[in-house]
Image 1 (tube, helix red, strand yellow):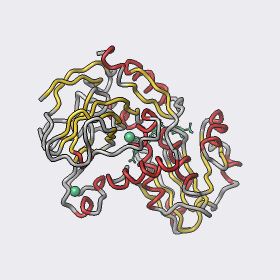
Image 2 (cartoon, helix red, strand yellow; image 1 turned 120 degrees about the vertical axis):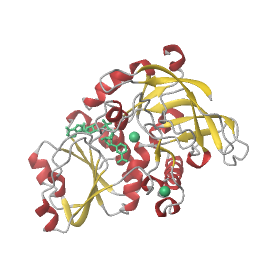
Image 3 (cartoon, protein in one colour; image 1 turned 135 degrees about the vertical axis):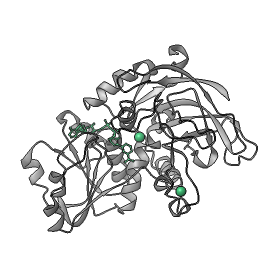
Length: 351
Ligand code: NAP
Ligand code: ZN
Ligand code: ZN
């Protein structure tokens, strides 16, 4: 084991603060990464505050990790010292179940190991995430990063990017389709960029009138203020696919009514309480209400390569780690443009 530092919280009602802990030594297939940047996902906040009722404390969040390889195990083939490397939401899975065999490790039938708040296979201890100086991950769960993109702005691709890319691909979004993205936060702004790059006609739904101009710059063809019933009504029954990226309680039936017959509303936003579904809206138009979880490792690599080719990164605001609680409170007010990213060089100073 070796000593590491990070930012963690001891309970749901305590702020995150400096934290010292140990990481496992590098095994034969492991890569040790010195973390340069870590994105701040709303899931970090849900977990730190125990909103999903499954948090193990101390909790050290962060699953949008980018950095440099500083050590590799003897059997590592994908990475060498000095390479850029990324880690997303998973660090391990059973690798043998049907889902793992299909490259869908996020749906591992024996449960994937989360980058934080999971149980580390190698040590049996709770996993600690990317709000830290270094991380050790099996190379099978480490991603290669495009060299042509700004490193800090690549970090959010590891969760926000893949979580929107995967359902857009699964539901075959492309030219000639009208696609809705709900909520212009971390996930939503990546959804707009990616759906636009895939050639769809993109409509962004927002509760924040001050985000309209940004949404258009990011690739939205139209922007709808979701609180305005007239604007919503104008789109009734017209969408091929809608991706809901909202982190809080809201009325999804307003969106179900905007789908064409047989079309799908996919939920990636994960509010803590159940959402009510008006079943007649599904029944009368054979509509689908679905969900999607991040993406597999192969698909995450495909997404990173796609972003490299298309020059796609996240719109970010870089923060020192000591400002993480301020970032969380701004996130709760939808005041994010459009992803906070922690500059991990500030960790030394804070801890
Ligand atoms: P975020 O940056 O905080 O963005 C959420 C956006 O939702 C806000 O910017 C806001 O956009 C909109 N919103 C907030 N409160 C709302 C309300 N009361 N009614 C309607 N809209 C509201 O969060 P994020 O990091 O993108 O994460 C979004 C959700 O996805 C979280 O629940 C997160 O846990 C979940 N998530 C799921 C997966 C998965 O695999 N399924 C992966 C990562 C994250 P506007 O200002 O434009 O309205
Ligand atoms: Zn996330
Ligand atoms: Zn599995």
